[in-house]
Length: 79
Image 1 (cartoon, rainbow, N blue to C red):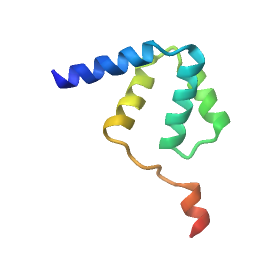
Image 2: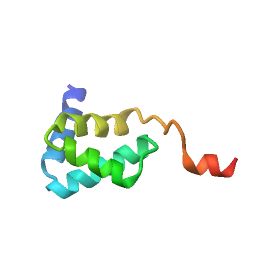
Image 3: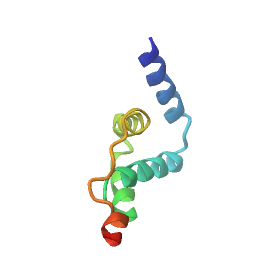
Image 4: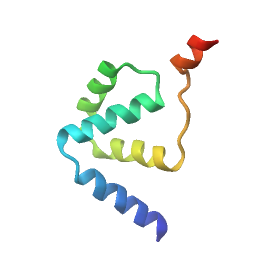
């Protein structure tokens, strides 16, 4: 029941977003997960907007089991 509640909350939240809010969230989630430029993330977000399950998955993953970026630019510059 708890898992269904979380899924429903995520779905409800995503359904409440405007187009640009969803795109910006997608961009933010992609950039937090991957070493990707803003332009690349925006292009991917716009291309995948018609597939809401992808955004749902990214948000659910970020909330429940976030994985660090595979290569952080900040860490690379400091080493």
